Length: 122
Image 1 (cartoon, rainbow, N blue to C red):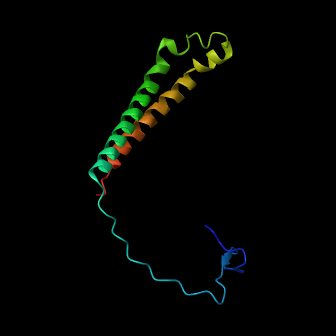
Image 2: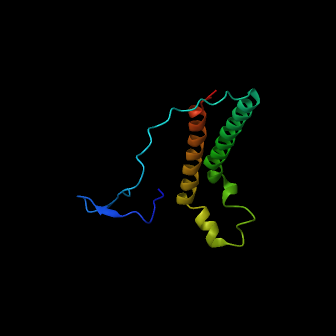
């Protein structure tokens, strides 16, 4: 919300300040009718469809990987974690694996939610 710093503030019954319009301010204009947008081109609609499809596919793929990989033996037994035994024990804990699985479920949920909520405003 953007407000004019020169406008006076008045106190309401709740004790919070309310914004008062200046005495020479014009009255608010009535709401205008919405302007009809021109119809979208076929190329725009297909690009939007493909974009949503790729987004859903990416979310589902990453989500399934995050649900499966933490429970595989390669999760903690890899060459990147060998020099860091403390980090290896943290990554191999059930809590960290559960967090990754939860993020995977959330990722799959977001992907399918986008697919369900997709509407073509043509």
